[in-house]
Image 1 (cartoon, rainbow, N blue to C red):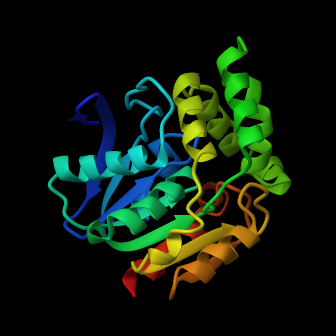
Image 2 (image 1 turned 90 degrees about the vertical axis):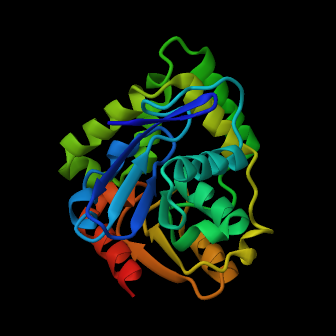
Length: 260
């Protein structure tokens, strides 16, 4: 799969599908663009699907220093520019959703529709993020030191029991993530607070949340939908990685929204 050379950043991406509108999928913290595998076959029937590995993740560059949501948002703009894509639909889950909010506020001219999934305008506390950053940077086991606890938040107990192979695949993705890239993106989420800006979003927006999500619960989705005028809200019976836990329902919710 190809790479885009964007200054210091080498971005790994995949662009597949026919001649329809471009639909960008942005991964969550600790994953890579393969987290969207279940959505791609259906989506690429109607869209050109652009997946990319966020800076510090997958096969994209792990650049030095802590990152910011603005930096990660500008990375998306750089990728679109390099591919000569003027306007796109954008879907981000968790960290990807935070990037989507930044784009909705600061680059609305690049968006046709926006999907904010399992995300919030502010996620967690500085203390929690600092503790996680310290763990992955100092522990000799790196990502394995946090993987088990993260997996419990990603998936509901029922899903972990019924779909162990999917859970194991997600855990392997997480454990293989770069500790430095993960920590740098943790810092971006730690320092993010978009609660006062998201009311500026005018792009038609879908908010997806998991009824069993302990990371970004229903109250966070309620806040997003209240602040973003005209947004649509959909609940799925899932925890944090709702696109993996409820792939058919997730894909249908997204497809229905984009087809309106």
